[in-house]
Image 1: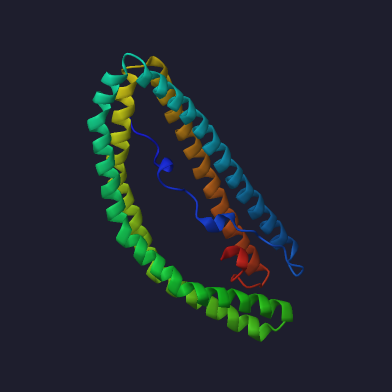
Image 2: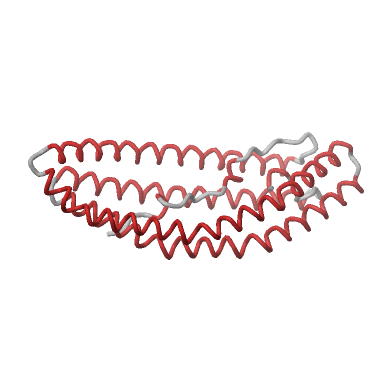
Length: 240
């Protein structure tokens, strides 16, 4: 039995949790799209918090039962049974960390390289909007779009590499954790039920967050299209 991968990897980019400020110049369609994006972003944030809270509660119950098990006459046998399995888990976690480290360093270097440029680009777009200077807005829009293209050209291959490395190494981690849980369940029916409850809840939360993330991505695309239809710049801070 395997566990959902969402427990290891966050599903949503941090940019999904950013604000989507309304502008006085927005058309009704753009305003509606902004409000829709803001709503689904809040839904994602709420469901993520609620899901984590529910999982933490079950884990707390598991910890209490583990303490009871280890304090019982079965405690020594339980510890001896899971000790080699914990060694396997530590080895799998160490292997994943080492495999991800180089890629993460490269990703951070790219973000640091482009960060100041893109922040300046966004400031230029906002300044042009506030001043009503169409020529300056067109120039700022062209620049931020070009800079973003350069950023993603370097960033996306590394993000795919990180995803691949994480997926390749996560299976061993999940298998090790499942082996520990299954072994402990042999000593306690209560733990067996709690582990099953945890896996079910984790899967439910994973499916909810996947749906929420898709809704945010769809809303972002709807806002982008509304901006294009209104003749406004798609180099909008809400889409940064």
